[in-house]
Length: 139
Image (cartoon, rainbow, N blue to C red; front, side, top):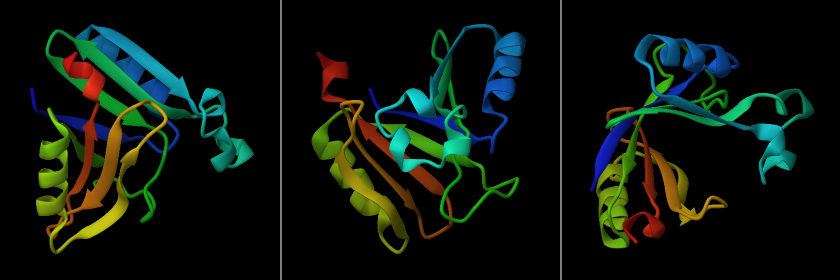
């Protein structure tokens, strides 16, 4: 099933913020630390204890977060993107193509270390999108 979820950049406060949201909303929180990831070598040493990806789940609720900052840097207000979890390879390719028209591709669709096809773009209105398709989710 195709879903859109909020993905928030916290610029170093991800663990604190996601723990706060867990306390407020309940559910389970997961943290993936940069230094423990397969791409740790791509980050400066000072980022090793920061959060690469986090998720808070409770029933149908999914809130995601990170300490990573996009290419434009961090400004309060530009730290929320829409994460679109797609239901097929065809769907992710179609959505990515259409959403990126007139916008900027920040990271083209490609297979990622977590096993999914993933890409990032900013649409012509300046909205950030992260598209993800994990073929194993439908099995």
